[in-house]
Length: 186
Image (cartoon, rainbow, N blue to C red; front, side, top):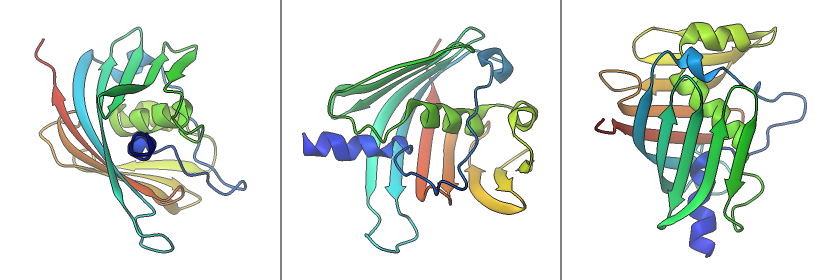
């Protein structure tokens, strides 16, 4: 069971940033995504990737992400067990979790990362509070900044942003996540 707990930490919402600064929550409408997709993903997370303190270790998990105009749904599976269910309908975030999933894995942070990576830049920008900026190259890179300081870097390596490989580096919460995505056959 310890292996299950470790594997689930890769959902990336494990670290708590300093109280004086936290990444803004994103609660964007599912319809703002602009399409309906069903994505199969392999997530790999490195906690503390800068090598300071504890040595960084990689943990992997499989996920099914479905987005349509009505809802965002994500199911996380580790070691053959469903460890997290998340559903966002634009009004309410509902989640259920495996009993051994650490409380530090927060459904709101998972939703934030999904929307930061996959939603159109203009939708993300419109939701950011004062002092926050999203820089987007339109092709292969996106950066979230606060007062000019880079806090999240995202690099895309696919034909489209929702297929191929994405790397999210969260400098504030100290993790790096690689998302390998394929579309489900429809």
